[in-house]
Image 1 (cartoon, helix red, strand yellow):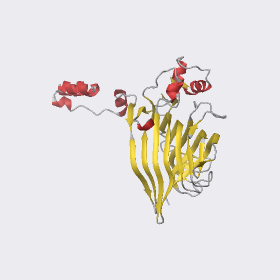
Image 2 (image 1 turned 180 degrees about the horizontal axis):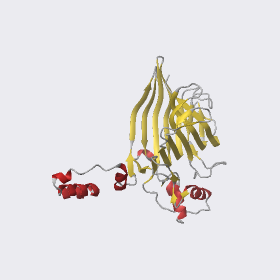
Image 3 (image 1 turned 60 degrees about the vertical axis):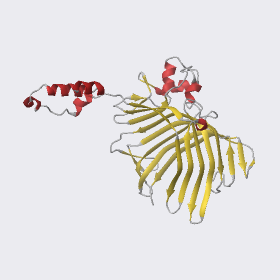
Image 4 (image 1 turned 90 degrees about the vertical axis):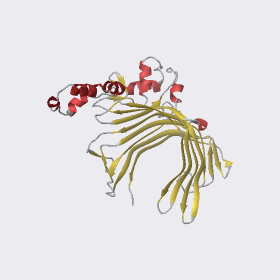
Length: 339
């Protein structure tokens, strides 16, 4: 039974110790001592975890309640046309000091170096310059950083950029977003549908220990922070906007949008994005320089995209199309705390 257990679980180091222990007399066995950390580090060894994922998500109602309530109703996340959201691969690593791990478009850099992609393409050349690090492809991390990278299980033809960029498709649907109070309920948005593709997405929890740093606005944040980097494209979106005075950009009600596209194929900031919109942000514990309140700091936020709304309706009637080129949100910092 002992050999069967060892073979089944492949715990070779532990099995050798156990086998040796069974051949010793009891007085000799009493001389065993626990292994210290440095010895254990030389015995253990797996370079991270890979998870292949497919799923569909349905939430009937998601509600935040304070004095009133805000509800997201009929939320659905799937692949295109309500199929399974699949072909996703998560790689999870705890970095060693100076270790280079997959990040962003590092897979493009690896293919370019192998001659599978044309480096005359400016985006490909940018990826090769950005992600080629000391003979590896990715980004260099510090000891103890937790690195989670979302990519595809199967990217298709290694010489096809389109296969790479469209490897993971998604569909997000929301029946309505409502607010409820003593006066009743009001629909803010309804019939939201977004279809598109998810590009490389990275979540990194930096191991900054107990260190802190000061932001440009004077607020102090922890050196241990969550960093988000993602690329995506919306190829077809629609929604009905039913509440006025929601934001200053369109200060009127009864707005409908059809054929929404969010990408980054025009303008002056397309380099390195492969036509996809991008979002980066950092989250950490922080203390506001203005109020002295402690809370969740969301800082170094950046959003870059081109936005096309070919059908823009007011009161059910189209008034034409709306386009944004080089739409950018930068230098954005928020401190979130209760009151």
